[in-house]
View (cartoon, rainbow, N blue to C red):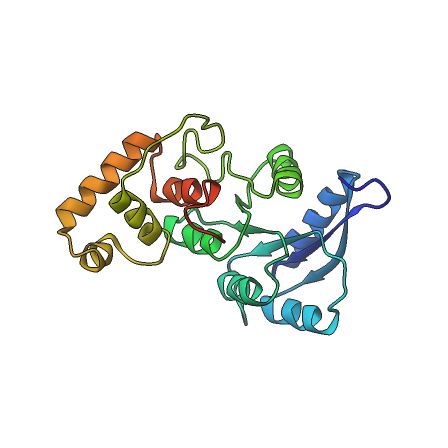
Length: 216
């Protein structure tokens, strides 16, 4: 945490009441201040291009917005401002969207009905450690991505499979890319889920990021 000033946060969300309430919540934490609020990704990007020296510690980015949505904004940030830490906000806990946001650089993904306590924990974790993994989305994620201390040996093809799983490819497309049958790919997936003690493809992506199998 900074000692001389509060951490500066930007909110990008098209729902005015939600963004206003979120700003009040953030102010109540004491160590943070909301310096700007934007209603979509386009006006946020315009601001970044016009204020290249603006000090920004964290961006809270809505996934579903008009004009320019969260994913398109995240892709722009990955190319142009990879230094910015972003937590994605959404009402959806869809695997595909979560994977896309994370692989495009989001450091965390929170549902909008997250409790204030978990929300604060997420902000602090991203600010201090770089990522927020624990209880990323209700009921569907990993068991031990954050607390894995043991050395796990992965075969070369398992690593290749993990890298492909971190893309937008379907399992069928991965099978074709690796010149393997879909049944074999299903086998890789189940073996890795068991070996890494995870339950979903999202858990696989987070494991890959944490262990630098893929870089975001």
